Image 1 (cartoon, rainbow, N blue to C red):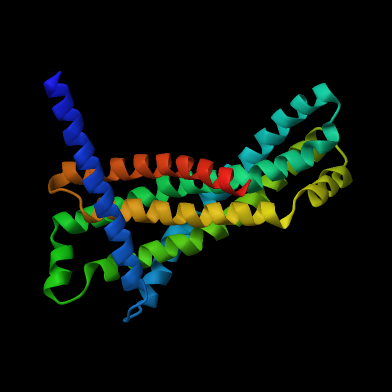
Image 2 (cartoon, helix red, strand yellow):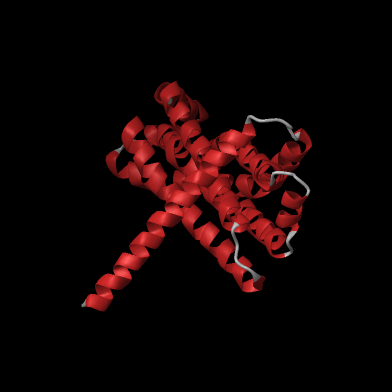
Length: 256
């Protein structure tokens, strides 16, 4: 029993210490983001990596998410004679929930893992230490552009996801199930308000911070060796995905 208590205590202390280090890491990053020099070339490079190169997987995920949501929603709504509400059901589900959440998860799997692995490799090859020796802040040079790029890219990708997802629902509802396009889009127009859109964008902004923050932190402090990099990458993806879902619940409960 004493051993169990000691083990739980050790893990609790380690968890608290790790949480504190993570918050200090993001606070130092925020402080360095407003200090010169401003490396816009690095920022644009990371926006291209996180945003542009994730566009294909976002579009592919969005169109099939919208299609399956419309198909499943139609056969559910027909039980209650409410087929005309298919458009609002698809649009609100995508704009408020599926759009930001799936975008965050897809970016985590495609770009977040790469960010953690890249910084982890730079750590074990002592490139991070070399920057510090040359008098360059490694956090400002390596971490700040990646976090800013995530904050810029995720809301834009979420908007693209929303548009493509609603279009995917249109293909199923109108082209396959022969629903009136006027009914589909008029229902969306009457049901979706600015509050729904702003809620989705707030979630996307928060998820962009979570993904880049967690992945850069895990990669920046990766342990030595190939095993350390692999553990950092796996931990970054898992923790980011879990925090996205947890944060989604709390944001929804606050903004509902």
